[in-house]
Length: 178
Image (tube, rainbow, N blue to C red; front, side, top):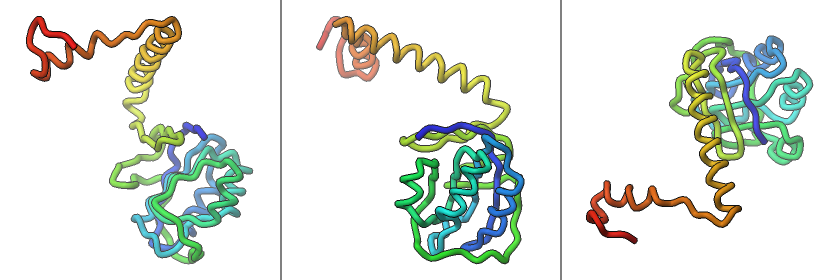
């Protein structure tokens, strides 16, 4: 499960998903709906029906600082959902909030349009103004890792840097080696 897309941010009141429904009505294909649920785990904010609606709308993923439900069906669907927890209790649909407003999810500030990227290891938010810089740094890291893997497949272990790092850490004296 991998995804990337611009944040469509949502702020809800604990246990109420009215504004997530509003966000689904506004979502464009590729959007990542990022929900500030305040970390509330006393009731789910989404379930399989909303996941199905999001998928049909072309939404890339849900990132929710709150609980979700229908875990088995959602996992089987392959739709990316990252949440603070799970709870079988359903939400109310009666209290306003905000859509496309700065939010905080898991203690991370997310602004509308920030690049949200996720995979099985987790989710990151990249501020819009840093996207080019971060993409370049990520590409450089991927290129280095591919070179390392290629060298390994050719029987070469490239770990000379370890000796230098151990010297810098004071673990090896000059002239010593592993």
